[in-house]
Image 1: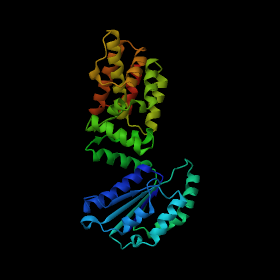
Image 2: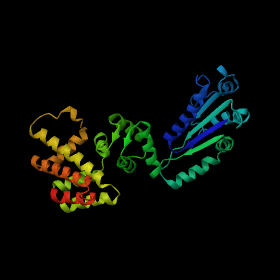
Image 3: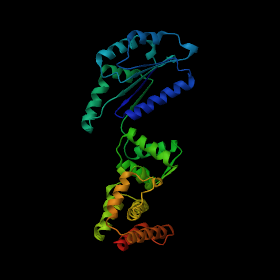
Image 4: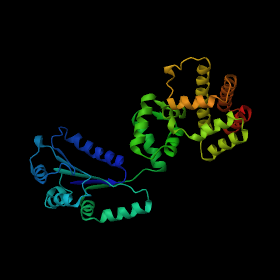
Length: 326
């Protein structure tokens, strides 16, 4: 029985492969009948032996091939034996053969489509697609599918992430599931509830530079530019409360760095502030006095309270904050 997973996203290929292997191991727990082959370790005689040998403990056999289809002379040997073997039959439940194949995307959608059309017509691939008990094609996740994947990864770690966090990660971080899974793991170790403020603190290098530009405009008392940047955020679909959270986060950092710098006191390690955040806060703090920062922080508190108590609509409250802070 053949299973085939292939496509242009190596993370999803590994995920699907692990899913099938997990299903196999749930029924065949010893793992003694699992064989893995790639271009470096394939020996025809060993493969033939693995297929024909009697399994220990009466377990089913699992044979995994990873990224072997792009080398014709190599795959010819495999498929010559497969075609003569009953392992390829969909009714054979004694031998499970999994092929996983990653194809590098070119970055050009039209070129990738052409490349895929050629790939599926290759003899060995066509054979797998015809004979496979189950075939899965994967491709990079986009839009809602990527958001759902990020949400699932947080949920699997028993972590609740604000919708704004998921939206921000989808739209602003690299669309690379290996990278995103590492960032999600890092955030999950920090807290069981992730807000935009926490996201900015833990992964500050990915915070939208427009937030910093808005603060720079406030610092230079450029009310028109600050309002323009704020409205650009809202037009892109950013929520007013998300923006307020980011502003509170950064002004808090500016205030703390300014306070410790002016008192010539070392910044406490328990602040847990990323070096990137520290440097940005230090640079922006040069444009404010400590008393000005205290007033701004108080205005942010009042803005937050006005929104949460229903006194003002979020967008109106932010406009008023910018108007009075400049």
